[in-house]
Image (cartoon, rainbow, N blue to C red; front, side, top):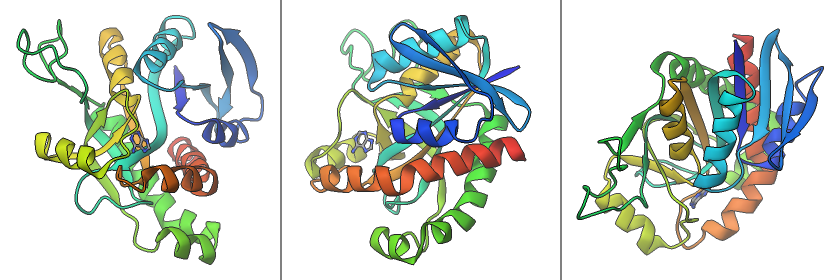
Length: 248
Ligand code: ADE
């Protein structure tokens, strides 16, 4: 069994690779696939690429060419739901492409040919991932230091589980974020890859779990919050979560 570790960000992949004692890089289709072991588990780590098409190609290759039998995706997302704050973690139960719109031929958000708009993550793998996130949130903020906890308000971070949205847009306007919340009131957060990864995993019947750390609130301040958070917090969280997941 080979577990794919898909990182949305180079900083995250770097932190994950630092955990592997024996990784070997294979280049294919302009991507670097790193095969190795983590806690004795065979893994293949890769950058998703940004946006739905890049992430879908990466996922298809992971499964069809690199033999991945399960996929875990990490990254950051913009918080949408009330109470989903910067530093919180979202483990996806369902994933939806918010920019999919073939209406009036198909209902808004439905993926043509699939008869549905929502793709479920794997329950058992997501339960394990959520436990790893809870443990990480108990320890990682303190490890980052008091200054980071204060700067990013990480004191009372929590794990949420529910609907994650994906679209080929960085949501950086409060008006757009509010429109998404009105349209999909149960949405917790928004990113640019996860639901595309979910669609490909569904095609192949491969289990998927997704975790996203909230880097911004998908509002008018998103472009400022996002880069600060990436370099200082997100990469360390992702590596700590993956390490916990496989060390369980
Ligand atoms: N990833 C992190 N923040 C995001 C945002 N505001 N919109 C889309 N993807 C994101």
